[in-house]
Length: 181
Image 1 (tube, rainbow, N blue to C red):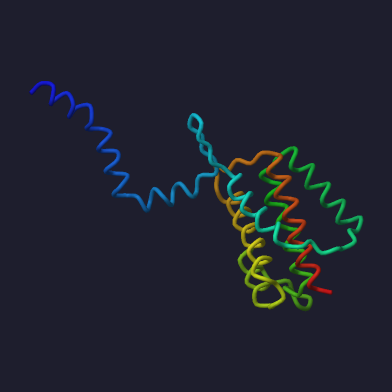
Image 2 (cartoon, helix red, strand yellow; image 1 turned 180 degrees about the vertical axis):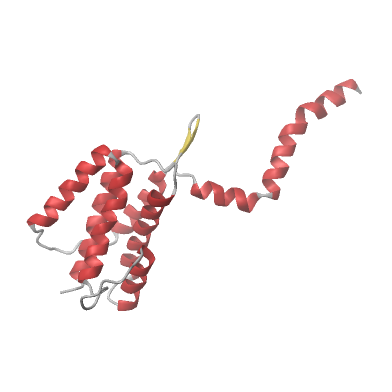
């Protein structure tokens, strides 16, 4: 009998934790989706997952041939310098490439520039009918990554990941600008 009591004592906490996890599984799932990086022994999940998905989407998109102006090259160099100092800030700032391209695509008409948000940009591009689902999917993935970088306080990005995001943002902006002509 004493042996049985010891087994129950040893299993009480693990079973309780598993049971609570089961009861709150949807909340736990949502919480895990918000985690930007997680590492325990050999298991690691991070920003890398979102970035890899966006890169896979970008492989299906043929980059339009556009002449890069000096200002665009300068802007990209500035973003690369920002990535050296603050990769997270570079991700947030790289989204401006998409915003600028959307503005050239007719998001803002006339002299008044309306207040906008990343979802509004995606909705505008979708409603224009000029973009394939793959192109819109890439822009949406970039938007989601940018949102995580902007709004999650514990979001961690390496310089290399920020530079990869920047390359994807340049490709996304080029796709949007190519539809203008």
